[in-house]
Length: 214
Ligand SMILES: [Zn+2]
Image 1 (cartoon, rainbow, N blue to C red):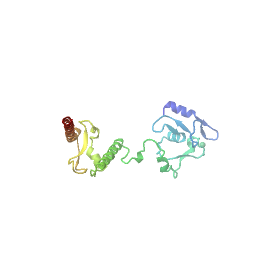
Image 2 (cartoon, rainbow, N blue to C red):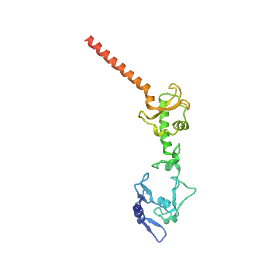
Image 3 (cartoon, protein in one colour):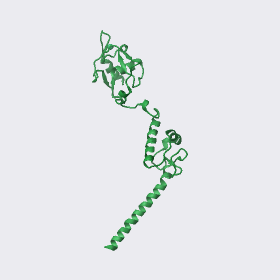
Image 4 (tube, rainbow, N blue to C red):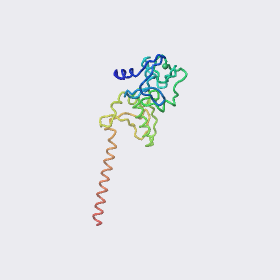
């Protein structure tokens, strides 16, 4: 939230004698105040929740629910807000609604590189399964094999690819290595070249046959 937005935010709070600080801005379908900031991952914030975090200078985990002592949903008086220890938002109710990153759900931790590597690992495992190649690598193996070279992966000739030492063998920790893509592609390229040559020869033969026949 920008300083300007914070000023706007504060200007929408009306302090009543009864003790409640009333939110006079927009209200969501559940009766709680909402405020548009445009910030990712949640452009619209819940006012009481945000104000609790702001005034207590904390970052609440997504499953912590902010409640009102006063029961007034549009109240943002920090003294009226609390987190009920025994009542949190049930996982099923926030998992399905939450947008944006969910680090507590990531299988390989919140490290964005590991997340990317995990996606890549899962894709590779699926491709190997599709090609019916026995796959025994774990994500830990995958991490170890890539080591510090993850940034050098890619599709250009000078970049690294993971392959099997023995192409007929299984995908195991010992049989998997990183090679330059150029080297990895060579057998395929020669195969492809052979196929093209053969195809052209066949077309030529066909033409000749047709020519002599007609
Ligand atoms: Zn209140």
